[in-house]
Image 1 (cartoon, rainbow, N blue to C red):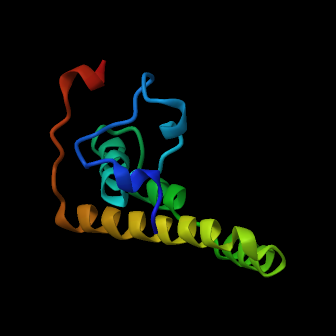
Image 2: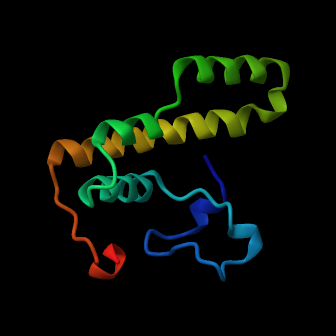
Length: 110
């Protein structure tokens, strides 16, 4: 999948000063999974609640795919989002299985 997020390197972030056309850029799945895992490491969320957040329920995915049959011009974007969520889930599970503690910046805790 090619999108504006593919133009960002892993060290780049989207900030308030990011040009408007980049504001809704999709980041890479690994970074999103790390951010979500950090929420677990900080005690803000459970692993299960994050899994629920990442997942696209089967009935929603099925509804979206039915929509694509009627509006194929939207199919690429919708399928891209569904695939992205799957990759985020895979990356998140790798972090959980590895039990890697994340270094939490003290300023983020404030």
